[in-house]
Image (cartoon, rainbow, N blue to C red; front, side, top):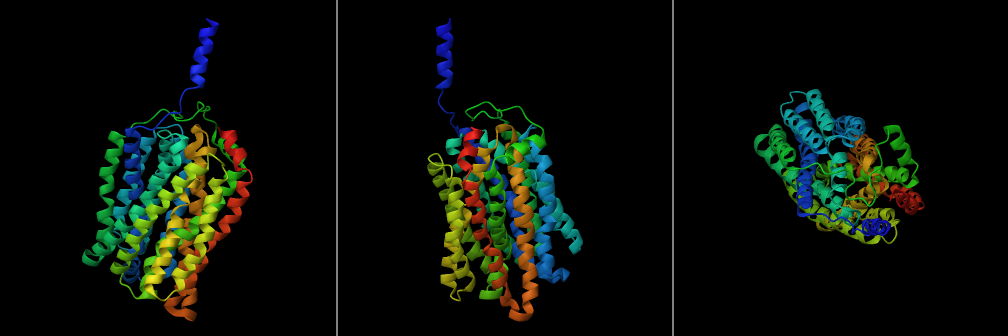
Length: 434
């Protein structure tokens, strides 16, 4: 009997690592569509800026407030309690509910009759989108083992880059033909159908089923956060990612206005050039980031943070070339290189967070990261550029946007300080989470 029990124990200990299934890839595809919807609702604003300014008579600073704090503050504040709900509740239903809310509020933005009403609608979008990424990341981690989680999270992140051309090209065309309000309506309504798809076809998996060890019992939020922040690399990746995101979010919101003011493009032209380049090379960036980190991080966990550090440093000169080169072809070539590198930081950062958090606190870990990233990156990035545009206009005219975007764009270099600080303890932190 003892020998039999020993054999059974050995079988359990030598059990092969769980593998993703075809259904895992289906769920990932649906969640990526949800993330695409999430980002379309944000990004169409970028090509509607001039129409909104013309109708309501607002400044670049006010547009920055609309694109940044009006959305980000409520998105971040609600993210933490919703994530905690997701760590013990039905993640599929939470995502479907949030998707319904942000889709309705996007459509309502198209009915706004004043800038105040538009701001309220954007706040509502932020409330709904708080229920998107944290539960989605937690679900993905229960459908994919650690050996392929970086690629899976990279594919999920590709929704952001798929959303760019769909939102900006479609939004610019719809606005030119039917007005800016129609763009919000057209992109808001389909999200309700997608919410039904999530609710009816995505199954809630057993929590922690892809991990080597069974999940620990769910701790109180304060205890879970204390455990996360006890891992120093988690603290540093929060602020590294926030500064990295400030650069990216600021660029995403203002790049179409930049192309119009500096290179004389119409919004429709700028949306095609930048939208298609962002799609193709954003997808390449996230695919490369996920592929590289899945191969290097098992050998040395410091690659979780070394990789985004390299991406930030190498990308810095190319954002400067994009902003200051007069020749359009050379400027766009510089943008392509920068964007491949900028898109690639998501996969290693998110894969690290999932590796540091236990199965019972993964949504909370992501939400805490997003709280910091969006409160610093999304709230400040667009607002900073808008404010500097207004302040520098008296000196540089419309060309002042070059300097505004340079200030925001180079914050990702500062992020390297935090990434490298986190790299000093990341191996120990990841090992303690296994």
